[in-house]
Image (cartoon, rainbow over all chains, first blue to last red; front, side, top):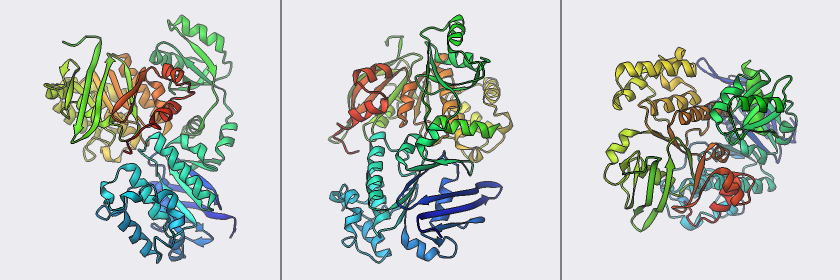
Length: 307
Length: 248
């Protein structure tokens, strides 16, 4: 066992009937790291979380948390991990305060005793502590769930899509809280379908259909993007897309907002493309090079896989 | 009568729950064929506003028309003339793809032969033919969302309301979804869409930003970035939403 690792995952597989939810997943989360699991719904993120927090057994492979085996040492692991499931799982009929006390008592601690660890988050909702959890807004539920997951001072935190359906500002504030926890020494495994959150992680794994496409720092992933990417826009974006699809100098193209993203094929010539588009009746044409982001990386890896 | 260039025209639309103004005097117009983004923080009043525009909720005050019908007096007619796709998947999981289309086609009064034609066209376009007899519940999320869009536009509405249509969908499918939106828009359908993906605002012709029940900005994404001296819509959103007083 490696003392620098908070989580060690080796060749983990899990199937539901004929569906392979996880297919030989292998990666490590280092101590004190925020590790992001980035992938769409159905990628296998929740299954992986459930195995790691000992709620589900894997079919094959192994995983260790803090050097403890998820199958053999599940009792010990449960005292060391904090888990915030994707679905709101607190008691809606209990108040904020009662939920906190309940989770503290499950782990044999009191809220007062461990107040310091939850304070930065809990203090934001504490003035509503007599309010029932079921009557809270999405953002407040999220803060309460995180507080409950932290009250027993876990060393590894598992957050399954904590920001899904939350607006951009609240999401950004949530990531500030995670960074704060990391500073206090927690190791964090967090999943998200929002690729823009990848940049807030130390390292990320891109996951799709139960297997890991790539693992690296977000910056390295973008730096290692080896295709030539261009942005193209015009007065009519749908016509433009159809024309680009049939252009022989283009390997791939997809919508991306103001500009369509175009992966250059062999012999790509921006000036010649501009002329061809104009000849097709398009106007206000602009072609520029694009710095890829995590979504472009993900699309490249998915396209490779589908071929 | 409404101006024919605009499919939505509302003035001072307000919805009050007790003393709480969920939507506070919003006024705006949406052009026919436009892709119109409706953005704002959680709790800003987007859903309440959208429900009033869809004829699902009765405004406390204000006036306006959607698809030529009065938002105060003709809610029922509005419902029949719009398409709506909600953020939670809204098809029947225990029915097949085709059965869902027949059900919703029937509800919207689409004639049988016409429905068949549109289904065939859709199966071909989306490469769905193999799945026409598959239970919707066993389809991947991205497919369901695309199907939900097709079903929401089966009756060829002049305008379709999409409430967070792409949440949780993989990047390739998300882009295919936007391609469907572009296509519908190029065929003249107006798209009214909410999203939490700020990069998706860039797909829209024009967009609004709602804060505390009011519309704080309305323009093209490019002009908004210029106006707020921001490099992205995400930044514009932060500048506006940070000033919000309402904590959801």
